[in-house]
Image (tube, rainbow, N blue to C red; front, side):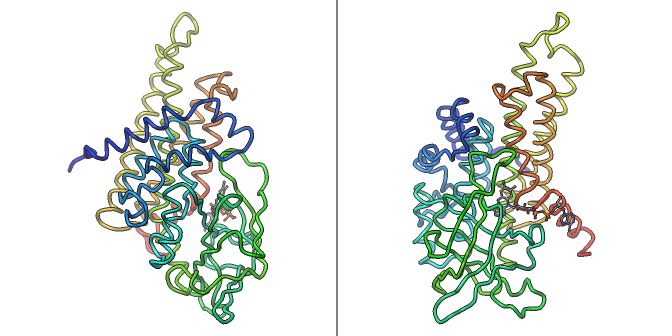
Length: 383
Ligand SMILES: Cc1cc2nc3c(=O)[nH]c(=O)nc-3n(C[C@H](O)[C@H](O)[C@H](O)COP(=O)(O)OP(=O)(O)OC[C@H]3O[C@@H](n4cnc5c(N)ncnc54)[C@H](O)[C@@H]3O)c2cc1C
């Protein structure tokens, strides 16, 4: 067993860190948080360095690396600043659906633009009445000649306001029993007539990434926009989550480390009762707890990514990585606020923003509870 990254992986990790360290400033992160703006210039710069298309195939403009290298990039950026790192990581959200299931034409049409930072992507599963449970959808895509006519609404969709193409999970067979056998993934370009996106409203964190309500009224797309096989969309979505959940784990891991880094520098300089906070045993134990959780989160996240790349998808391991790293990030960011005292509560010192940003890693792409359901069903069988 070898726990060392390869030389090449270390170089990728360093390139991502050098980029984030050089380009992400506290002022800009605050500006994106307060003005709710996507860091488009940084997304384009990251793309220019090959960091956005890191695990897209080379023949479609990507770097051809695996999930582990994508995890290293995401972790490094989120370590410098989770708000900016997560927004950039999410800029190409679900482009893997196209990479996994798209036809040659679809891949050529979209992926090079994603890798160059010229096209943002998204995926729309969630509906007002279908959140954790995506075994049925109210959004329908009915065939009419050579087209699908799509009607329905989706909620909480990342990049909904700025993506150029979004993969929609729609019902294509109204009679399918069980219903999940009648769902399909369909690419919808957001400039299609009948497509409307509106901001989902103020949210706790992740302000650098837009979240939208999407409405589709008789949106027509050619049947060639089908991604993968008709009526296999539910299974394809789960396949996609096997990889994407590990990327969310990497967001959380970087966010946990970001909070921890700020704690360590704070407790070394803050003095109370004539001693540095770092000299109090209670602080030392908290630091030890945090460091151990981060190490465990890193090990499970890297293992899940490595397993995905080398042995194939392992849904339970992907869920464990997402569940554990996200929990660790939320606990560590919360404790970081406590350890900075009043300063922790103020925006200037970043940890309150880190807490707000990482909190969503326990919610999107399957809540903490849904990850536990996946893990348990692997052990106990489907209930
Ligand atoms: C910022 C943000 C961005 C998002 N981006 C996207 C996106 O790009 N695309 C997209 O499709 N969706 C997106 N989502 C939606 C997200 O995936 C859903 O919010 C999430 O899957 C939960 O669904 P829900 O909100 O309907 O909660 P519900 O499903 O109503 O769940 C409510 C609570 O009940 C629990 N629960 C539900 N069912 C079970 C069960 N069987 N066992 C145990 N507990 C259960 C949940 O864990 C949760 O705690 C985003 C959400 C947010 C907040």
